[in-house]
Length: 313
Ligand SMILES: Cc1cc2nc3c(=O)[nH]c(=O)nc-3n(C[C@H](O)[C@H](O)[C@H](O)COP(=O)(O)O)c2cc1C
Ligand code: SF4
Ligand code: SF4
Image (tube, rainbow, N blue to C red):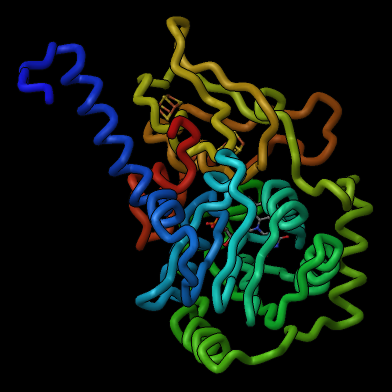
């Protein structure tokens, strides 16, 4: 048996680092995933979030035995096999479609559950997002028993002033209560879609030129710039679900496939991240409604968002 309890300073720091990472992983849901292997959970809820709305909704739909799991973390760690009595997913609609990473996840994941539900958050116009999810998830071999939507603050900076959005009463508690009751009663229901909503979506796809198989997958270096206002605080390096930002000796560098989730631009304390104007005016053209207004869900802290999206763990 080793009786020498002395450790070097280097070893102590290494242990401390491991403990901190352990704590962070536990709060982001990864620890509980590891600890529950082989055990059947009551409910698992997966979420993707840029500005906290979906994390808030996922938390509100969680009961005592629920595991909340961040999709960017699951994708990063290659975790795709899950079993529970009930499995849910909460994501923001982007052009009425799921974020690219959510598509990737659902097309790879094996989800075994008696009841599957999806709650899609949106800000102004949901169109046929319910049907789009039904179709994409079925292609991945999943049948969702319940697909509903809930209107939240619209974080789409090109068209909306965040200050005005935050003042609007979108009846979130009432709508949430209805969804919670539906899910608790294991309601089998897909929110109806009108012909007009399908037409609106088709019109949007024509105008935007987006690929329906991809949606909003962009290149961050083509969409954003970092100005001299940057103070190297590093927040963007934690909140980006794709880990596109890095603190380098020349300041913050950014590149890579981008979900266009706005976690970076909305959470920069200096408003140093700005849209890059597109040279030919193509969508999205880089203009925005109010560059001085930024948004994060009032119930979600910066630390919550860092733990949800951090790609360094
Ligand atoms: C790229 C992008 C596209 C969006 N497209 C739509 C849309 O088509 N319809 C809509 O009502 N809201 C749209 N929104 C608003 C978000 O769906 C909504 O604010 C959502 O609740 C944000 O969730 P989060 O805070 O978890 O990221 C879009 C937001 C972004 C960033
Ligand atoms: S969040 Fe803003 S200020 Fe902080 S490092 Fe990133 S760009 Fe700079
Ligand atoms: S670069 Fe910004 S918008 Fe793109 S994925 Fe990262 S946080 Fe989201």
